[in-house]
Length: 111
Image 1: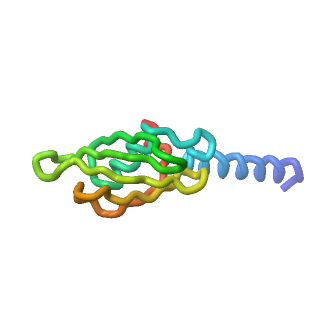
Image 2 (image 1 turned 90 degrees about the horizontal axis):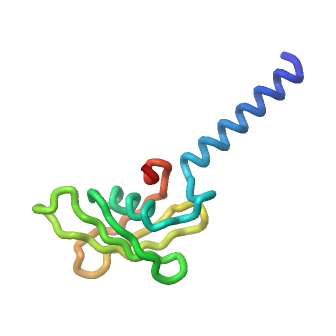
């Protein structure tokens, strides 16, 4: 293999790795926004949809609506985002009945 071909191959591998990382953790570039965080939290809580509001610092207040509303109530979580990668941990707010959840915003949360 020539040096030029080796350089081209290495460049393609680095480019593909960068694209894969951004698809895996897009909040690294875009930041954390309410709509994507709400989808990620709802998915982790087993809900159909949700909403989030920024609170203080890296803390958000999120509400999830269950997939089957007849079987459970809406749940509220206090969610803390850690770092710039869009990963988060959530704890149920008092009597909403939810369990601790965690996750990361991925490219799927944007669609």
